[in-house]
Amino acid sequence: MKTANTFVLLISLLLPSVAHYAEAEEEDKLQFSGFTRVVLGYLDDKDAEYVGYDNSVSFDQQSLIGLQADYTFNDQLSLTGQVIGHTGEQRASGLEWLYLTYTPSKALRIKLGKQRIPFFNYSDSLDVGFAYPWLTLPQQFYDTAFFSTFEGVLANYEYTFDNWVMNFEGYWGRHDDKIYLASGEIDTQVTGLYGVNTSAAYNNWTFRAAYNEGNANLTLPGAAQFVEVLNQFGFSQSAETLNPDGLIRFYQLSANYENLDYFVRSEVAKMVGESDPVPDIDSFYISAGYNFYPYTVYISYGDRDVYYDHPANEIPYGISPDLDVLAATYETVLAGFPDDKSQGTKIGLRWDWRYNVALKGEVTYVHADKISNDFALKDLGDFDGSAILYQFGVEWVF
Image 1: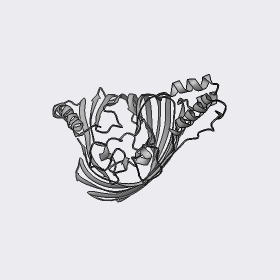
Image 2 (image 1 turned 30 degrees about the vertical axis):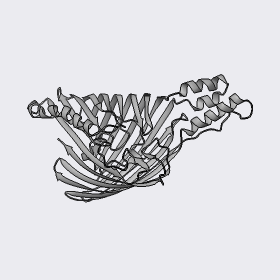
Image 3 (image 1 turned 45 degrees about the vertical axis):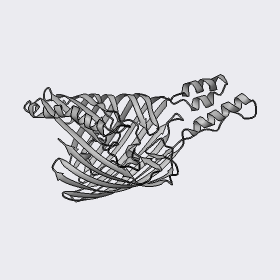
């Protein structure tokens, strides 16, 4: 478990670069910016863990610091790099973005390199809490995708007519890194990764639709050896069931309304995995808030349903002791991929204390109908499925 010392160390490493910002500002071509957040949390149940928080006060889970550098070669070409230091164990610290941006016109922008995958409305600002009203993004929804960056090319085109602003975006590339679950980390490669999305803004309304897919290759410890044994016994169907490689599809829709006084924001998503060890996931959230500057109050509800379609066991019992062991082992392996279903309701307050500093408080009531211990909510013993998470955070951009 990382501690507060990790966070202090990350700050000490990045502060020299921040101090250099004053000098770099004089250079028009090179600009530095940054963001940080300190989030304290406490879960009111000793028998559970939620997004890393337990029955003790901690800021080790969602606190972070980031530094971004932008170098402008000319009016059309620029380079962006971003590094982030996380205190939580479910996100890796280091280089987050590194890409070239080519802007041949005001309407068209092309990016090449390591960058954010545009799965969601807030994909670009996942780590910049100052950019959204909540202290934390709706967890039941924003944990639907297991990874957030890719290496490749992205093109964005925008045009306006009358009161409409239309945006079209497409990307292609790959992802080669670890994904982090509550139960551990998994080496993951996603090739042939591509997606398209479009958004339309009209007056106070914004609508968005997205489609993404890629061929996933997951490294599951011990899976390859057991699959080989199944094939040796002639149970190819069962062997194929445990093959973690396959196509993943991801769909997203959203509708938002916002004016100076209040907002209503919503997103719905579905992930479909072709291989049996990769679940299907349905998720959504809806949130409403009221602005009375410098304060914003909000309420949000999110739901996520993670489910598998395990086939019937084709390995017969009662033929031989070896087959009995094989059948029991196969069922035990499948039991390691249980369904997971939870809901989260949060209320919160944001106070824009300064133009670049926001203080936030948030209370989340989480309830689980099914707990797999692979995702945000973990059962540590006699958990009854319901808990309350109290959080306070400071968001700062510079």
